Length: 517
Image (tube, rainbow, N blue to C red):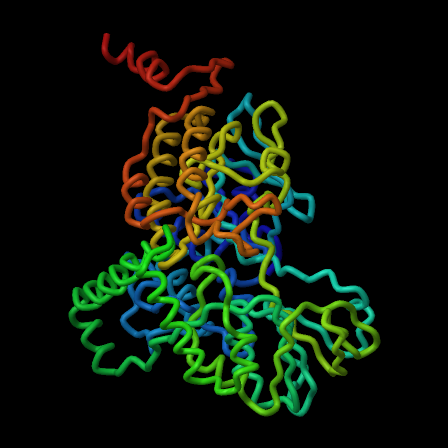
């Protein structure tokens, strides 16, 4: 499939909504638009298939660390989940099923990479430019590019000259057989705790390079019996209730992260017991014991990570990599290891201080410049100076303890009302008031102080300056409540007609005066 697979006449017209990205957020937005009777939209996807991170991350052991029933749309439930924690292939299949169920494939342009977006205040339209140099116009743009779509590569001297095979977990090389190989895994995040147990039994040796140990807790995973699936299919309310129970359990854990307490110390003891149960060697156990507060870095769930590290063919180097020469990895502690392959489990470039591509708003404002000290937005969805540019999973809307889908659904409700407000007029745009963005982000950073997320460790939650622009600093239900209604008073309406610019309520009065007369 090639770029702009839709009819050329459509390409030359103006879209009501352009959705950039086809992961959970992009598909969810498209479903909500369809359900609201808004059909003039397009999903723009840079790849040849939908699915975002669940399309790209096909490494061995890839799975979700949120229970399946909560890691799916409430408005598109799946009674056929096979496990409590679904694996990559099943989640990708669920997303493809949603696309087919709501007839979204015909509204998706594949192999279409957007490289810039520019707003025209004269027409209140966004012009999107693709990698191939083609352009299309849209009244509103929904950025659904996600946070886990750009692999982060470590800056290790000599890695580009490594004589073996190197690949990132998000770009797994399935043509390369690891059986019988000496393998190094660099990184100990969410992908590492899944890939290490999956490949450790196959390789000759595995060396894990760990800068910081993770807090790892038991994963209460199991197959979902056919009888349960049948119950969910025949009585959907039972699945809805189970989903609610899972959500409530996660929400109840929120206080663990908000401030140190006896409860958080108790939780840390559970993590240490989990480690002691599977790792008998005191030296290895010491290497794997975190020394930072629970929640400062992402908490991981696994039942087989610690047993894999205790295998005879697995060793842990508790420091970073200093350099690579030939096929030899030199660690910071002076040790060295000859390997055949390097697996980079080093995560992603989370856009805490950058835009996914060039976005140019009012008066030549450049989002990359505005976010150079750390990304910020209003409720994580709108940014002053960029009218009709809407973000899903924007700054400070990441979950610290629950499903990202809950946050996405909260945003979809708010954004849908924004879209309806704009489309009620022929040529309108809504611009966020600066004071709203400023006061909201001051509140966010004030509340972030003294939480586990800012307690001193180095994590991908933080910008280089130490500002947390990633997570929501509180209960997810609170975020649901502040996004339930579209607060129209926080925006100024601009009308392109005759070059007029009108403030919100005043513009409405002028437009309806003839009808009232």
